[in-house]
Amino acid sequence: MRWTVKPIPTQETIDDLAKELKVENIIAQLLIQRGITNYDEAKAFFRPELSHLHDPYLMKDMDKAVVRIEHAMQEEENILIYGDYDVDGTTSVALVSSFLLEFYPNVATYIPDRYLEGYGISFQGIDFAADNDISLIIALDCGVKALDQIAYAKQKGIDVIVCDHHRPGDTLPDAVAILDPKQEACPYPYKELCGCGVGFKLIQALGVRLGKTIHDLVPFLDLVATAIAADIVPITGENRVLAHHGLQVINSNPRIGFKAIIDQIKKKELTITDVVFIIAPRINAAGRMKHGQHAVELLTAADFLTAQRFAQEIEVFNAERKTLDQEITEEALLQIQENSEEDRFTSVVYKENWHKGVIGIVASRLTETYYRPTLVFTKSGDKLAASARSVKGFDIYNALEGCSDWLEQFGGHMYAAGLTLMEEQYEQFKTQFEKVVAETIDPKLLQPEITIDAKINLDQITPKLMRILKQFAPFGPGNMTPVFMAEGVMDSGYARGVGEDEKHLKCALYQFGSAPIGAIGFNLGNKIDRVKNGKPFDAVFSLDENEWNGTVSLQLKLRDIR
Image (cartoon, rainbow, N blue to C red; front, side, top):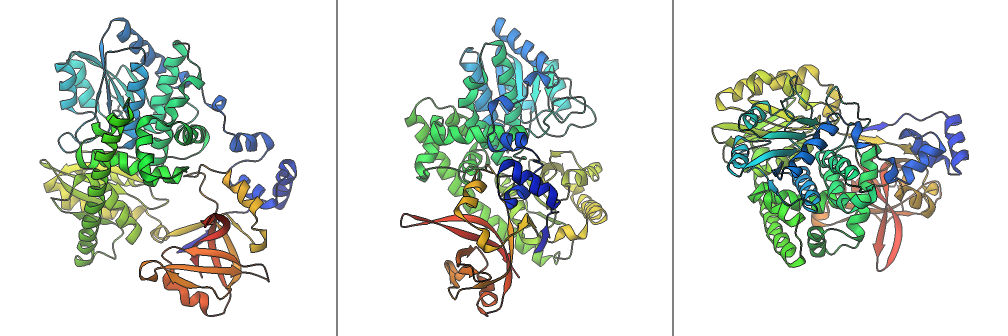
């Protein structure tokens, strides 16, 4: 692991903010590193208010979108809410459809089949709309690069409103309105909304015309918070406000579909991490293993018995997903080893019968193992489809642009993307992708990095510090859990291996005569001899709370030692 300590602000800057906020210097330092330099910014950070949300009409084409929807309702047109099959897409569809259905009945939903139609707006979906006399499609979490499909819809007399957050191509589709803060001409102040976030801005704008306040829309924020967490967008600015209030809804008054999931996991209060690892995989499992429409039906269920039935089905899908994920990951790792590709700058693997629904997860697993840009391919109809994942600091979307001559289509973000190509182009693409990455990546990015916020002495770790750090949540990209380094620590003689094969490390550390603090290091059991040899070492950790027999105590969550 590569340890990198963030730049430390000047002592004067730290002292000034600490004095203004009446907090310890370590808190002031963490805030400055997050771009917070005065009382008002700190207040907005610690107390995210709905009033901090931007006017939705600042988004390019928002007025056009609202006018077109209002016209559709006045003329009693049929409206189709269309979204991608992942968490961001299905929550978006649930959000916009359930909002519209509160005051307009002619609304249907559509999630494309991952295997028969693939990502985004499909020709089959447009045919479905035409066959059902639908004249307006609202596309969510997709559409900004669907030039041919939207042209096809126009030929059939169907208008399309695009609500997307992916990077547009050089040419925009001929849609009635394109809501995407990432398009160059869009003046919207916050660019990092997820697809469901863009959908929320749409219903916020519609709500203004219907006399609804932002507080009337709070019940929809459980969906938005889930999409923010699952899509790994920055939890800064507007996303932080939406995630903060959405988590409150999840924990106090969630929609029936969420309640059906939460009741199965028996957890009292969910954090954003719980949403990422507990709720999101279950919603995703529907689109991965069966069909994303199951997730929409769960998230829009009107009674608890129906929601329970869908939740139980999705629990089965999730169990199947876990099994396939493990099997395919093992096959992919073996493929890399057998082909002696450990020295490459990239990992590119392919097997025609790998389940398309889990190749994204497998790509993430391979990236964790070999720490390099990774593509996992499978057969999809007469083409190959792949999920791409990157390492911290490397833009895999740009790398794919450098290989676009061999691709049928691609789209995504800096760290995650999807693509398709013809099978005969695979080997040439693979060679070009390796070449592009080798020429553009900084070699140090191929070594896992731990980013350290601050050095700290163990005697600075107090319940008061922990109380304040908990208010930094929700955590995520742009506001990660604070990570500390303590130098010259020693074990108090408590160190032992725990868990299966003793692969985890449990110990109690002290420093300079301080009282010992319990510590747990997941997957650090192989370093137990280093801890037990009686010599000082450095430790990197975050702070955590350990609850045992009703007693809560502070503990260090070890990331690495040296």
